[in-house]
Every structure is written in C-alpha cells, then in structure tokens.
Image (cartoon, rainbow, N blue to C red; front, top):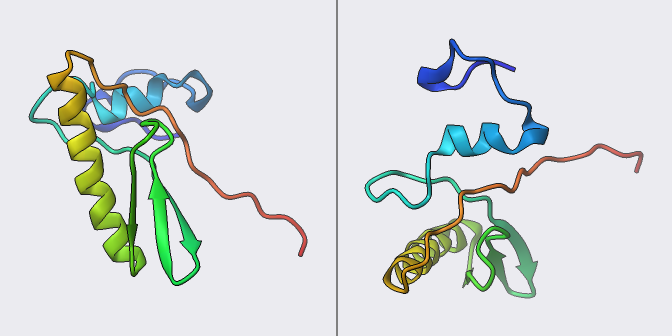
Amino acid sequence: MAGLGANHDKETPSPDSGAWYTEEHLDAGRLGYTMKYAIVIERAGNNYSAYAPDLPGCVATGDSIDETKARMAEAITMHLEGMREDGVTPPAPTVVCDYVAVPA
C-alpha cells in the first residue's frame, strides 16, 4: 500500500489497525478540514436512501443517487455541527467500504 500524502515517508499503518484511515482523513473534531465519511446508498422503491455508519441517526433521501449524495453531505455537515454545539467531538471516520466478488 502506498504512503499517505505528506506522511509518505512514514511506515503506512495497516488498514486493519484503523489508524491509516484516521491519519489520511484527519481529526473529525478540527474545524476547517474536509472529512470523508463512508455512506451507504440503497434503492428504496421509487427513490434512494442513505446513511453514514460512523454517524448513527444521520440519514437522507433523494430521487437520484446524485441528489442523495448531495443531501447526505448536507446531513453530515448538520450532524457534525450539532455534535459540536452539544460539546461532543465528532468521531473520526473508521468505516472501510469494499466489494467482494462471489460466483453468481
């Protein structure tokens, strides 16, 4: 696995340790930084719904995948702002998404 950004000269933590994701995506509590939270988008009849596994209760819906992603970005922003207003440090992203190929 290649190094991560400015930390490329350091030994890259294992994906199993969870540290690589936090290091790459910075501290969720620091204002002014962009964070990358995993979202799951599901078909829901005539629209789509999404949630962020790292942020329980943070959900959104939309008529298309793109609209759902945009609404999730807004929902996550509001969720993190609410946590900070309540004096809670938002969690660093820890969820790792991937696909597994299996015989059909």
